Image 1 (tube, rainbow, N blue to C red):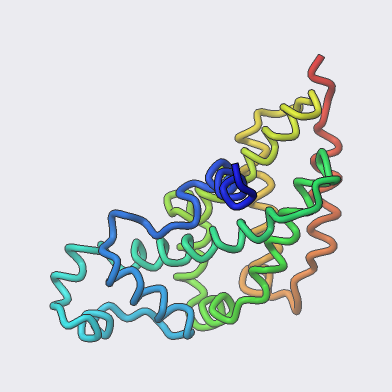
Image 2: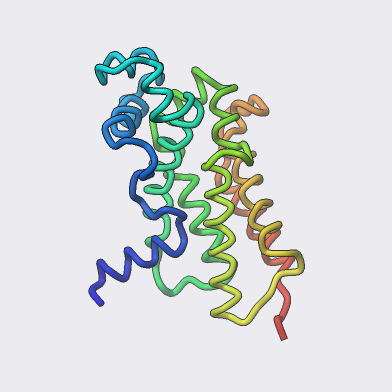
Length: 211
């Protein structure tokens, strides 16, 4: 197996859907939605329909409502950032590896202009799409973290004092609290070092010997 194939398998293992667009949304619609978000511009369904040369009703029938389309676009871009965050030195192990990947992911998110536009101009919609348990972003990130935790359990023979899915959800919620602190808590800046410190203490405190 080539290095590229191995990397692709690793991404597929940790990230639901890998890094490919969602097959249930027509490619031309999805590409246009992603392009609009990345530019960055507000995703307006009427404007998108006009750009695609179709009716608004047709757009809704093919791609769903705005939150659904926008959520899938954001999750697609988020998966790409997760894939980048997974590219870490092989020497890292245990809770340190999990925290380093999560911190690196948060750092990458913070570097994205569309992220700032979305949170700044549409805070309610952004939090609804980014942090809802019914949306693809939070659900997907919980799965990613759960798989990261499982890897450490398998490789190091450890276990956690709480169910893995609960711990993964907690890690994601803490990450969200720091990433979106400027919107939720009117914080002046995002403190990624403090986030990593808290996550490290949390995970270290819940590790126990599986035996």
